[in-house]
Length: 269
Image (tube, rainbow, N blue to C red; front, side, top):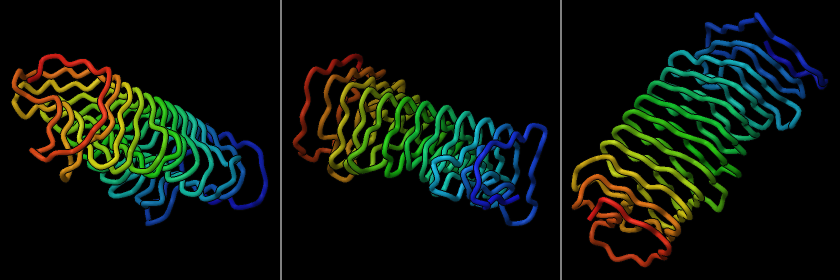
């Protein structure tokens, strides 16, 4: 189904399922319509449900999209809004929110990204088995979001001067949180069970955070640098490590100027 007529209103899709067994999308929304309670399946990277309009009145509420193969569950490409939606994928992205906004949404993938967000996202969750749980790329606002992964990075904070607040990254065997360049995060929680906790490079800032590494190994570091640079502002953070010889900060022996204040340290070397 594709809706392109320039109209408005709400369509209740309760009991309806849209399946595209070819290479296309299950349901495309390109106008200011509000869809609720729908379910769609597709193998397309454009999503089982897809919003292709910058109109803020284009909206999905309580919709579920399932991407099979490399397909995406839900794709909010140009704008619009997702509320209480669920996107699931095999090797594609569970929810791809490259623009627009998402509230209380969950994206899940087996080997791809659980949730990839480039707009405004509040209280959303990304989960992945072997991929990154939550990826924030060129985001505007990311608040209260969480990324989980078993073997991938929990949460990837993309670069740019942006607001990433109250985010959590949790991984069983990779970094809890990984930063791109010039990423800024406030009130974070990073935890890893068998890797270092935070990986971060040039221009990154962490202000208020809990940095936990449950890996009882000398490599169970709190924050590690990337390419000779490390997070350069660390303020009001609490470090909790599991190995008495593991360093709280490790930049591979490369000198780098940083700003630190009001941090606490427990368990490490």
